[in-house]
Image 1: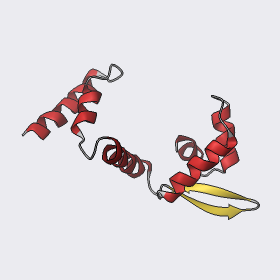
Image 2: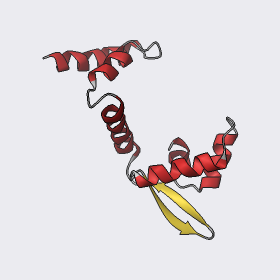
Image 3: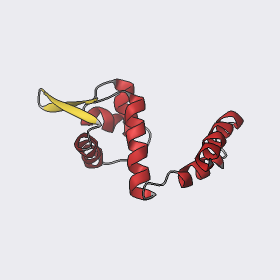
Length: 110
């Protein structure tokens, strides 16, 4: 998704080349993941020449929210508090971000 968002529209080849520049990945893996993202409604494909052009279906923030909700439902059985607890202890968060997460945790307790 990050590559498609950055490019605004991309073919499987475009995403593959962008990812391959950073790490080793199979073309078929990229194709499979883009098809999964399309099936979930995050991407829309349109035929262009002999390939498909993929575009995000909604603004980035909406898609991220839907993906997080999907993760919470699948991995945490719908309970978001374990995720918030983990985030509150994440060393990569700034103090301001940590405080915001803590406020959310406090609101959940009320």
